[in-house]
Image 1: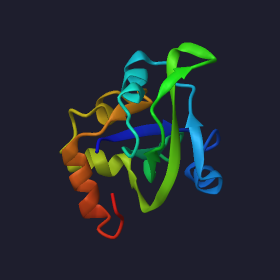
Image 2 (image 1 turned 60 degrees about the horizontal axis):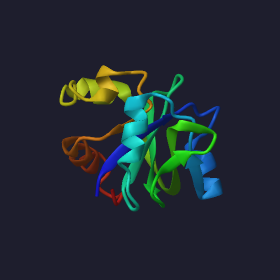
Image 3 (image 1 turned 90 degrees about the horizontal axis):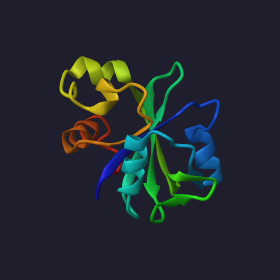
Image 4 (image 1 turned 60 degrees about the vertical axis):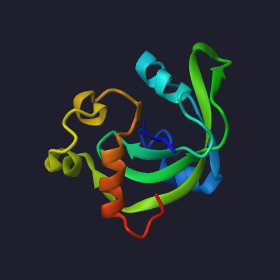
Length: 136
């Protein structure tokens, strides 16, 4: 299983909306590096949902439900269907990630504008320690 992180402005689409709807099509990604990350997603992979726009925190977890495909509205982009897994409480803030000094080479820390990315295995291990009761 591979882990990814997808950023969203909670005023645009939030983890609460995903919980309510149970699944969504993740679209609107334009950056080639982020589109490449989406193209690597496979069913049952996990996606950390990150709220940007002030909160700057990992707030929940989703799973990939289907293979990604070309966005019919934007042929240079990809979309993927995600399903809700859980909220993470308390959220893990970007400040906590940076403070750990373990992930300074990860895109979440280095490329603040990148919306979708692969998550390093060592980060997944770090999150498992933070959330021992959540099946990551």
